[in-house]
Length: 368
Image (cartoon, rainbow, N blue to C red; front, side):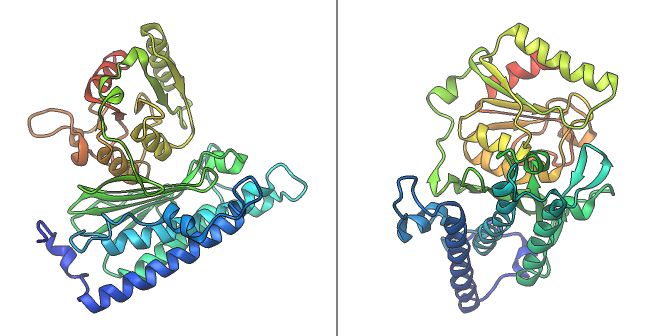
């Protein structure tokens, strides 16, 4: 029995025949995209042997839990996976040629947005246009919020309408430099809250997908929930991540650097800065890092940095909240910091960790 289906979502629902045809077509397209990705990036298994077709399909397939009839965003999930894989393929030529005689930096056509450290490439624009056009083709009544279409303008508000939130390349600086930590991020919201997230990192060949209530998966394998070592992790034994972003004022620099100084004085296992907020959240979700925070200065993130990764992190049992109250919408009616699926996607303040204790410990050290 399907419950709590948002009324606005029913206007796009298909009858069983149309829905089945859509899934068949979308699954076929996803298989084509997957095969193309493997042909270019994984022609062999590293020992000269071709990977089997079966393993390819399992590697990037949509988990059966998400393909169930009672999944509220079954069609959207299948589409998102296909689009993420194809957009990731658009990134591989630059990665493959970076630093070689075949490289042509002019192909990126870099354009600055707010300042020189905030820029977009031609592939950012190509990916977003492609993803948005495909979404509109299949779901014309859905809303879309994209990083590049927003630019330096005001970010459109998130309403109760089904809404896609897109980052065509998260980690654009890494991408342009040829560093492998970048990804395509596609989030989907229902009733004003994140509901589904798909993240594809082409150079590490990792596809994350999560749906509210149905779990989080990497390359089709469920991510472990917050149990065992993850549940017991303390700040002193944690890998702590932060992103300095675009903050360049003296006050902003001091705030960010002093927060790191306090962490090191308190004692942590180590710190990391990866250059991709979406992957930061995915890596916390799968236990590669233990906590990530942002918001000590003007380096705070945007809805497309949060949306898909939030679903992955929450479905892996992580604790995600605001680092501090930066906006009145960061707190609930009782004055407590919002957390989980109630998180304010428009906030510049965030902290996410493998358990609630490490989040509280990190917050107390960083925010003074």
